[in-house]
Image (tube, rainbow, N blue to C red; front, side):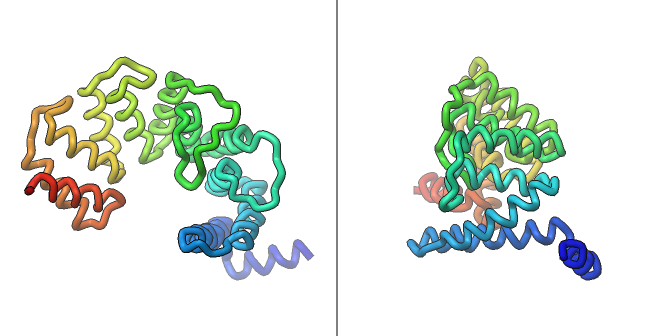
Length: 231
């Protein structure tokens, strides 16, 4: 039966990535229902079944997503000891398979910061800013677009290192070059305030305008920033 099913998938050129994309769309719908206060347990169960199978088959993106589900407590009815540790193991494996975001997620756990798609459950993992910063560097070296932003925040706030505004600005720029819109917003703030770089409010406002016109993740913050400035 399994051989027949896989043969059909091959004939229709259905890949693991196609199945992952389907599970991801289920995730998006489940989160939408959650925001609307509607029952989404059955969708999370479907997502979990698909993602678990794909992760077991070696799909690294599915490992990331499964870790987020476990750490976020989004697996209805599943009883598992140390879900955060299990999530970290999955992220480590995903990272070793080329998904740098795995390292970034582990770094966020060490900083006790919420995981995108996950939660603020950090299990028994001790706060360790030095380990977090090292993980963010690994994430950046392995291509994660958000890792550079977190490195910049560490240098800005003196987390795992001495405060260094110039390094913070440098890392915000690096992350922005990888199209991380939050890093671009942070870069603009530095330009406005002259933090780690010579102040350039004209350039700052150009960036804020771009974030708004691009409907970027931080568009609302950028719009609020400009409204405050012009007032």
